[in-house]
Image 1: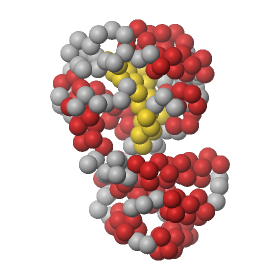
Image 2: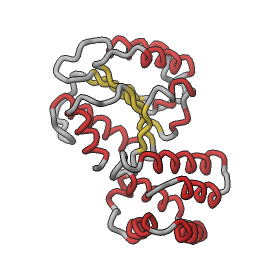
Image 3: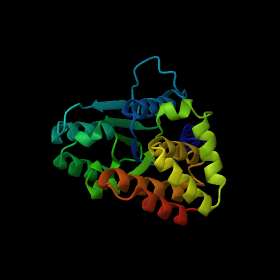
Length: 236
C-alpha cells in the first residue's frame, strides 16, 4: 500500500494521527501532498483542488525565525474552532523549521492538549530542525521526491529491487560499488521509495535507514559503516 492509499484508509477509518512532520528534499511536493490530504478530508477528493479549503489554514515562511509566538496563537485559535465541512481543522506549516524556539514551545503545548478534530502538518527538509520535545509529539513521514517516483522503472529502481532481495553479504558488496560509483544519494532515495510502498511492513527498516542517512548527511559519518549497520538491523 502506497502513502496516498495509507492516508486515505486512515482518513476513512478516522484513524489519522493529530500531528505529522512531512520531511524530505522537495518541500513543494510535500506541501502539495499535505494539501491533497486536507482536500480529501474536506471534499473526499485527492488532487482535484478547485476551490479554497474552508477548514484548512496554511502558514508559509521564507525566512529563518520568521514564525513566532503571534503566529502560533493564531494557529491555536484556528484549531480550536469546530470544523465546518471537514472532519478535521487542518493546519499546514510550510518551512516549519523557521519556527522560533519560543514558537516551537508554544506549539508543543497545543499538541499536548490538541482537540480531537485537529490535524497539524509541519513541512520541512530536516526533521531534526525542531526541539526534541516537539519532535517527539509528531509522527515523522519521509515523502520521496517526485523525480524518484516518476523514474521508478529505470535501471536504478530495478537494481534497488534486486538489492532488497539479496543476502546481507550481497547487499554490502552492492553498496560498496554504489558508493564507488558516486550514486549513493539516488540509490538510498530509491530504496526509501520502494520500502515506502508498504510503510507498515517496512516501518522499522525505514526508521533505521532514515536515522543512518541523517547521520551520514548531518555529521559526515562513514557511509559504508552506517549502511552496513542498517543492513544488519533490518529484515526485508
